[in-house]
Length: 222
Image (cartoon, rainbow, N blue to C red; front, side, top):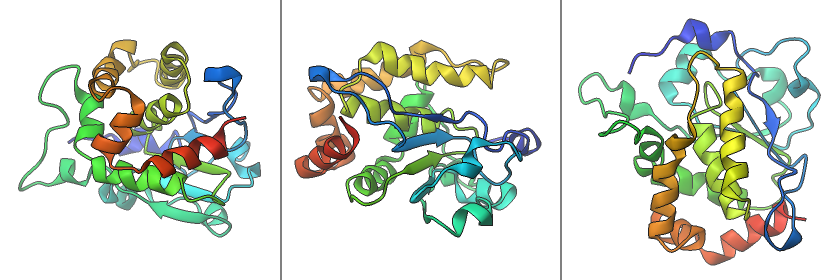
């Protein structure tokens, strides 16, 4: 795995948005100001809206190697939040036994889930705890691991897939030279459908309980 850390340092706090506001099934809507997503928080511009958020929980999905290079989230943020580091990607940087991101072209975003189901179980288990919102989750760029995490969460909340894909592609505003494509989520959606839908997928592939899924929906849907 080769990463341009100099480039990543320049986008601290970028690719930021609220996951709330999306219409969901049965006339519901994802609650605003509850879950946010962004790029890493090791550096933030002075004008970043992240500086004025009143977060309760911060979840870092970066690998330990990335955190060691870019740094932890800013102390000004960490001092007022519960910080959970759920590393996704350490195996990519193992010089002795590296794990490829995907075996087939176009399967990379599926691999981000398949290779790290335990980490996603921890992430969604955290979302089901209660008393953790407002919450922000991020990786280094806030587009790939964060993107599939957002896709799974919005699917769980009953958001239509066209809207899920639109949120995924919004990262292209920041990364216009390396644009994401809607087709990159197709293998993940197919895997979800192979489990009979999001409920079966979350229980069988990720390992959550029905009560946890209900708690997440109860907290994040109006």
